[in-house]
Each structure stands twice: as C-alpha cells, then as structure tokens.
Image (spheres, rainbow, N blue to C red):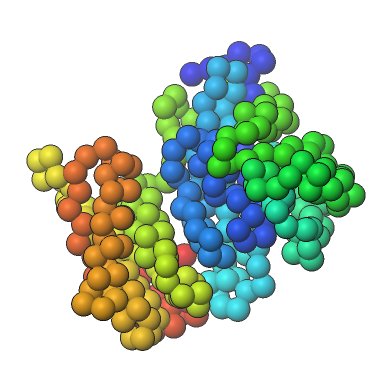
Length: 296
C-alpha cells in the first residue's frame, strides 16, 4: 500500500449525454471491460467503479448512467443515482463528442455540474472521427461553454491522448493514501458484471424501443471442476418483446448466449456453461417491488 506524501488518490466520473463515449473511455483507461458499451442510450445502469493503479496515484472511475428526462420510476432512480455520484467525486469529465455540435443536452448538463465542488474537465471525445479544422472549431465552442479547469481532446478507440487525460485528472485529485488494494480493478460483484455482459449482448441489434425494457438477473453461479455453470434470466416487459429477444427458432437467443459466454470467459479466465431464459415481468420499470428484485 502506498502512503507517501506526494501520492494522490480519489474519485472521478465522466458525464455527458447518451452515447458521448463515457463507458468506452472508462474501459480504455482501466484497460479492461468493466462498463458495458452500446450505441443505445441508457445502456449504463449500475455505478461501476474501475480502479487505475499507478506508481504515484490511484484514479477510481465511477461509471454512471446518462442524465435524461425520466419517463418511469427506473428513470427517476437512475437520475438520483447520477446526482448522488456527482456530489461525491473529486473530478468530473464532461464528455463532448467531436463529431457533433454542442447542443441543448450538453448545455443542460454543463449547467447542472457547474455548481458542484468537483474540478470540471471538458473531454472532447471521438477525435478520430473528425478533421483537424472541425476539432479546432469544437475546442473553441467548448471553451465558450463553461469554466473548465482543462480541456482535453481524446480518442478512446485509437488511444490518442488517453494518457494525457489520465495525467490531467490525476493532477486534480487530492493527496491521499491508497484507497483500494493493488491489483483490484473493480469493486463490483462478479455476478453483477456477468449480468451486465449478458445484457450488453442482448441489447446488440434489437430495436430502439427495447433497451430500456431489458434487465438481467444471474440466479446461480456453480463452479464445477474447470467449468463455471451460470444460470441467468433475461427480463422484458411484454410477450412481444420476449419473441424479439428469442428470435426465429431461438436464433437470436443463441447468438446472445454465444457472445455473452465469450465475454464472461474473458472476465473470469475460465470455461463457462451459460443457461439463459427469457421471462416477462410486466411493466417492471414502473414497479418498485420488481425494481428492487432486479437490483435497482
């Protein structure tokens, strides 16, 4: 454990409208998949902590859902979770995609975080998708958006400037002893990560109205010799959604199972048998009892 006088440790999170590249950036910094990524809005539901260990510092990244206009009880709870996280971190990185102009959503979030005690850093993401001239325009627009301690352009996909961003964020952390043990990448229980990986696979390729309606519960994990048996349920809200997730002659569910199994094998470093069932929990996003059961 590190405790020297120059050691820095603290919490940071990325904020921004849906699909601004927050989870991809978190994974690029930690160097391992701890946050699920999907082009669908509201992909992230759990606050997952990823820990980056360096010689002189420890950066603990908290992955939050995107702030949005809530239409359900689940939506309201996710927004409460976001605001609670914002109030507790040392550094907030506002993610603004370089391939889109600054919009109302960006201004709204910028206004929401401007009153917080955390140090604010603007992170211009997806710079691999734009020309130098467009990037220069975006950086000027970001400069006008608010009072940021730093503005850092990055590409999580190519890795460009990711280290620079880490240096900047670490520089704003308080001097502190180490917060987590060496080698610990996340404090999220493994079963939650397994459920998230299954949900990511289930989200891939379904219609736009479905992502909000999918939840996953890992019911049982049974290690047997060199094989880990995992029994999990995918929950949707209506029978018609169940048919979409299963697909013609269960073809879609098989694809979901194959992809999720590979991801989980990478996560736990061993062979996996994955047993998936799709179940209907009517309007679970609006039902406090069902939300509790599904971990919200």
